[in-house]
Each structure stands twice: as C-alpha cells, then as structure tokens.
Image 1 (cartoon, one colour):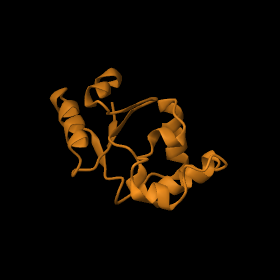
Image 2 (cartoon, rainbow, N blue to C red; image 1 turned 45 degrees about the vertical axis):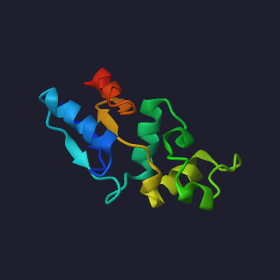
Image 3 (cartoon, rainbow, N blue to C red; image 1 turned 180 degrees about the vertical axis):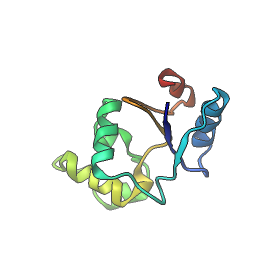
Length: 115
C-alpha cells in the first residue's frame, strides 16, 4: 500500500495527519507540495477522489486568493486548478491519497477512513 501525504511541515494539522498515519504503522510518501506542486492532472484526479471542486480545497483566507480574484464565479475548474498549481500555498492541507481514495485531513482523524 502506497500512502501519499501532501505535507507542509510548518502546519500543525499536517504534522498531526502525518503522525496519525505513522501511528498506524504506515510509512507514507511525503510530498512537500509547496516545493513540488502536483501536476494539473494529479490535482484534477485528487479533487475527483475527494468529490470536491477546486474552491473547496483552497485556502480562501489567503491574501493571494483575493489578490488573484479567485472568488470570480466565471473562472473555470481548469483555471482554478492552474491557480492552485502556480500558487501551492492555496492548497488546503494535508491531503492524503491511498490508491483510489483520498481524504482531506481536516480534522486529521478523517485520514483514518482511507487507511
């Protein structure tokens, strides 16, 4: 089983999510998405696995969200995904992927449902 966590070590929720995975005896692949963002295709796949639209996975309180006008309802899914890839700070964390299942670790315990 390959479990991947989109991780930001500076985020307490992300650290808690990683700890929960490790407590289950799983050594996940740690993707530091701020340094190496997912591709547009991977982001689209993960959003589909999460049953979310891009804005649901965005940190809407980030200044850059407002600066880029991402609340504009005319923006397409593709445009929003591109904004997330170009500005990975917008991506909510942690995201955990386990095969064809994914979970947003908010709260961190929701990760356990896919392990």
